[in-house]
Length: 295
Image 1 (tube, rainbow, N blue to C red):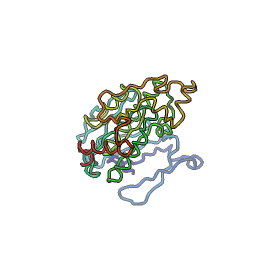
Image 2 (image 1 turned 90 degrees about the horizontal axis):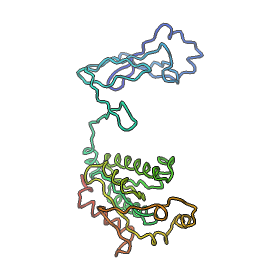
Image 3 (image 1 turned 180 degrees about the horizontal axis):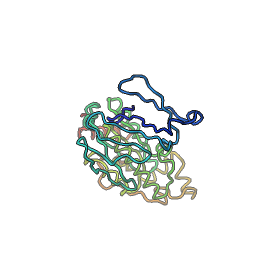
Image 4 (image 1 turned 90 degrees about the vertical axis):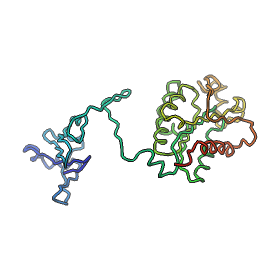
């Protein structure tokens, strides 16, 4: 008997399934089963190909108020309530169909109280070489020193794993930003101060990420550094390659950067006290004023 999801599963074996050959059993992965009356685990063989026995079914029996469910290789019932009535709460989002949002008893407010802070997304945008990553890491360090939990989603870093399948065409850039926006949303929901540092050149993509979060929880930081300054820095040598025609679609050279219109914070090049740490302090001051550094 398997306890799971509030129910218990008891294997129902037919006569044909009980006569399985030892060679078949030896290729199966053991499933640990335990009954309520016996504490001794009983290994039951289940093949690796997703319950492939033609005559092997698992039957869920309710502990108390739960419905009676039969688990086979088919999909489980749509949904159910404690009263035993089926409730159609499935939805379709994009290409995902028959999905249902599962709520938990521990919510965002509970996590924020635990961390003594409010989750949000600090979205740092600007040209390559504008100092986004440097400022993001400086901000992350200051918050850490103050006992606040934050995490940096760096544009290059996410392309090492989550977005390694994406290139730099317009549609790939849009998908890159969409994915990072969704991950950043999860961090904020966890109560973490998420620092996303990406060129994110298109205004519509940044606005779409803003729309994912509650009002005020998306804090756009514009690194307002002129192109010629960024190009003179050229920390990765990418501007030189773009000017030589070896990189196509490079932001600021042959692909546009759409500057934010209403950023919450603008950090301009050439301002007094404009070191990365001092820029980061300005963001911290904003967070303090808006109450994000306390629950």
